[in-house]
Image (cartoon, rainbow, N blue to C red; front, side, top):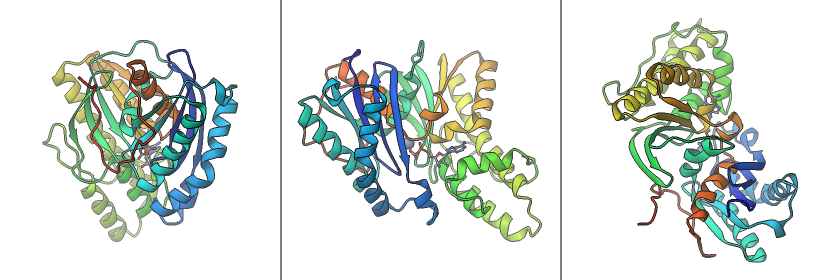
Length: 335
Ligand code: KG4
Ligand code: ZN
């Protein structure tokens, strides 16, 4: 299975994505984003997302297969995100995956979206160190995860309210910077002073847990009470507060656990300031820093393929009645 092409499909939220991987090699990674459509409403509308997946799924899958330079007959297996996510959105990818697995008479495997993010660091990588601590930061998740081995994960702590990506997105909306907000904040922050406005860092005393809802309230108040608000300064201050909270806790945790490495994954891992802060912190602590290329930070199917390869190699398979789940625990290797 390590040397055979695996088709992966991801449709859990607002990207329709398909990829072909062989082992740790990414042959193609196609993404049709719905961000522009959801920008009108300032966030993802589940029903609209599902319909957009219906339109995009076959062209995106076809493009992934063609770009990889293979045909459907060359595929050894189909991997698809089946949890967690928007049920209507997930169903589109899972149904397409089942149809291909059925037609080609090849195995199907359902993958947990967060395991995909966790294993996105495998892409074309050299040595991956275990155990390591992973900081997963995306639009829906903010988690510190102990990654003891492939398939052996434990969530040490998470956000009590908003995810880090949500804090970027909501902050950007309040500052009139559009959706999705992470990149918009990063760009605006380049010319801003990160110490211009003082914003609250949630749950400072908790080692593994985060809170970002107070930040949104504070930005709202700042906008309402500051007629001369400098948007670049506000964006830089918001980014700094999020980066400081995430990096201080992740670095303290990796040091406390004595792990040899820290990984940074998920959409917010694309943030330049966060990547730099953690790379510097890890260098100071003498631990390795692992993070995927930018294209594998935000939602994509290559990461689902990379996770699937590790499970298929252990002989894991799912049947064609595979279901979808809006919420789901991170999987562990069956004993
Ligand atoms: O992993 P992802 O694509 O989707 C989820 O699984 O949620 O993460 C999307 C999130 C969005 O909140 C987006 O604003 C954020 O990642 N993001 C960023 C950057 N690029 C994307 N946040 C900060 N800086 C960025 N450069
Ligand atoms: Zn994601």
